[in-house]
Structure formats: structure tokens, C-alpha cells
Amino acid sequence: MATGVSGSVVKPAAVRGLTRKFGDRTVLGGLDLEIEPGQFVALLGPSGCGKSTLLRILADLDREVSGDVEVAVRRAVAFQTPRLMPWKRVWRNVVLGLPGRPDKERAVAALAEVGLEHRVEVWPKVLSGGEAQRASLARALVREPDLLLLDEPFSALDALTRIKAQQLVGELWQRHGCAILLVTHDVEEALLLADRVLVMRDGCIGFDQVLDLERPRDVSDPAFLALRAELLSWLGVGEGSAR
Ligand SMILES: Nc1ncnc2c1ncn2[C@@H]1O[C@H](COP(=O)(O)OP(=O)(O)OP(=O)(O)O)[C@@H](O)[C@H]1O
Image (cartoon, rainbow, N blue to C red; front, top):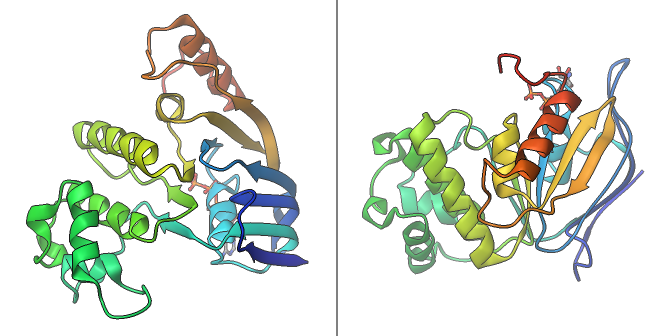
């Protein structure tokens, strides 16, 4: 096994032959993946196929693997739940874990970027679900990552908040230029946001396509609809079936 971090980043992530077993069960079976600098990659796949497992490995939260894993030193993660420390004010959460003295100015700038300049001093429990998730994004971005790992960050949000959060992530990505790996269950979300869509199957990447769709994406564009149908069929959901 070789895991490592690349200081001078050529690829934000380069994975070769990655295998992860839990007991007798092989969840990742020799997976290969390279992510290009600045690329927005969406990762789809049926529940339990190993998406979060892959993301945790890229985040260096799991090293019980075989294969080669090289990931940019500067990476950050935002999870499905915001995971803010309830005993620290929002701004302190944003810069938590950064080296040196807590830099309030930096935290305030990051919070302003996600529209939370009015929430700098409050405790996390005061935040709405959408605000907490934005604070979690600010905490990730303040690290100026080369690779931002997002594990279903919108799935717990109501429909309207979710649309706003998706737009925000799209804007932040364009501004920061970091590569993003977004784990999602939502085919439309993947097609609205990503440059490239992956579908996991049998412990590997089964479908891997760079999207040739103009931005902003048009959900009524025939090319968008064709890709949507193709992805749904990869996910075992036929067109016209209830989602
Ligand atoms: N720490 C663990 N110990 C044992 N099994 C685990 C562990 N973590 C994950 N698994 C198993 O690995 C498989 C893949 O889990 P993972 O969470 O990566 O799937 P997923 O594709 O992200 O699923 P979902 O879309 O439902 O979140 C599942 O069968 C899960 O039960």
C-alpha cells in the first residue's frame, strides 16, 4: 500500500488500484481515478456502493486500504451534516484547526462569502440547517483547498434551500478554482453542477464522462435530458419510473 499527499500538486487526486474491504466484503475493488486541477466531479451510485468510503479515503480519514492514493495536501471536506462544534462560536468553528492564532478576519471573510456575515458571533445552535451547511462550506473554503470533498452536502436541506446551496457551491467553485468531488444521489444536481460525472458500480468507476454542456445548464436541453436518462439507467432507474 502507498498512501500519500502531493505537495506540488499535479493532480488533486490520483488513485490507482484502490481496494477497501470491510471483513469479507470488498467495497472498493481496485478502483482507479484521477481528478484534474479545478475539475468539478460528481460521483453517483446506488446506496451502499462505496461513495462515502472513497471520499473518506481521499480525506485521509481512512487508511485501511491497499493501492496507491495521492491527494493534494490542501484539501477540505464538508459532510451531509455540518459537524460544527456547539461550544464554539460560528467564526471560531470556521478557523478551527488552522495553524496559528484563530484569525477572526479570515473567518469573517469566509463567512461573508457564503452570506453569513451576520452570523459571525452566534453559537451554532442558532443557525438554520441551510446556514449551518453554509458555515461548514466556509470552514472548508477558508483552508483554500486544491481539492474540496463534498459528501451529500445538500441532502438534508429543504428543496428551496437546496437550490440556493447548489447555486452557492457553483459560484464558490468558479471563484476559488479548486477541484471538487461531490458525492450525490441526485442526477440533476450532478448535471447542473459538474464538469464530469462518475457512477460507481461493483467497487469501481463504471461510468465516467466529461460533460459537453454549456453553463448555465438548461434542464430542458435535449443533451441534458439524454445524459439524465443515461445516468438514471446506470443507476437502475428507468425513464418514467418514480424517483
Ligand atoms: N466502518 C465500516 N465498517 C463496516 N462496513 C462499513 C463501514 N463503512 C462502510 N461500510 C460498508 O461499506 C459499504 C459502502 O458504504 P458507503 O457509506 O461508502 O456507501 P455509500 O455509497 O456512500 O452509501 P449511501 O449512498 O447510502 O451513503 C456499505 O455496505 C457499508 O455498510
